[in-house]
Image (cartoon, rainbow, N blue to C red; front, side):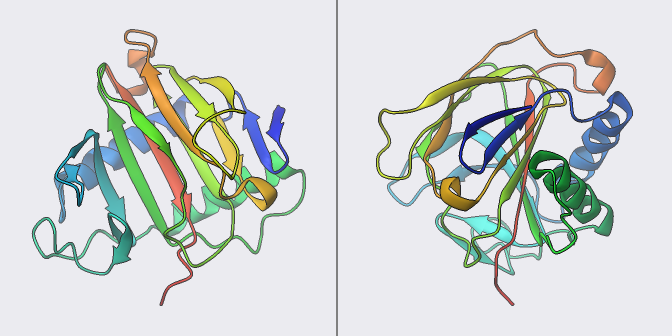
Length: 208
């Protein structure tokens, strides 16, 4: 376990192989719909290189909605209780205190192929300042965790491997972060993911 910044904690190998397999199966189901996985179109006309599917609430740049107006107009899959329990355990293990009051109601699942990356950004579309719980499965990535003021330095580069947990909250809740690179062929096919990287981030929207 390593504290990258105040409130930002990396826990390597947190997920068991069985938990990773379960998450891969669940992500495959969510990817099929009711709102399928897609390359999200950005307001400026660009398209994200990662593919995204949501549960609980639908995220589109830069807001949450009940219906996926930018895809097919349907409601995304419900946020499952078991995923919330996993989030509470993750928070407790990362912070060393009970996470019983943590109640995530949405998850964004991003799939990275070998060429995909994510620019530096803040997770600031939520009305709640509760921590973000991030889980990695598949290929290792270079994860860049920065500061709350700028997309540039200072930042810390962290290698996130399959099974790793990363939690950021408190003073680091609005830190800029991104994924400049994925390392192809570094994942274990035993997870059920032959190639690429899955990232599951749980959040509390603060919406009703």
